[in-house]
Length: 177
Image (tube, rainbow, N blue to C red; front, side, top):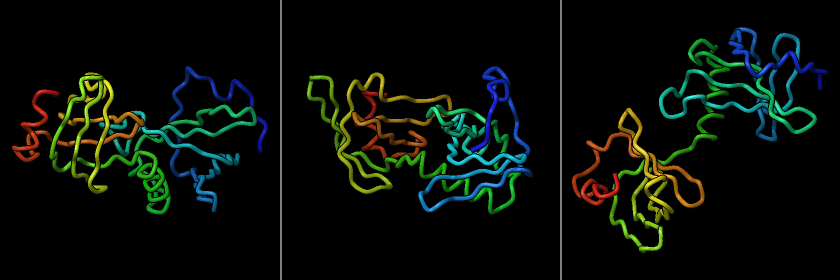
């Protein structure tokens, strides 16, 4: 591992990375490794800075240092600026990290009157019974009209467009959105 100076990673500096100098590789462990400007980073994390709006832009690249702290190296402004191989490595990693099944049909929503809703739904990951604690907080519609549902385990589900879900499902949701 390289020696790093704290000033190299100031938290108040936005550092846009030159995508032509990024060389990601995936190790057998599943972690991404990175060579960038003569430095090697052994455990990389990619984070979408705007995960619901910008899937391929403004991606934070960070590494874990010897003290187990995540240190940001910089930002990839747009994945489309990368070569195909590098873009695919990053896209695969991000798709795994941000796996969010789409709700395609709602069969029922039951309120147990103790703070939980139980949503019986069909998703792109199959039939699910989703337990939602505090629906007021965990049913969120963003400015783009995407409904994100967070279950009691922290898993996320989405309905990308409430106007396109079937009428029966929408009627079941009306009270909660």
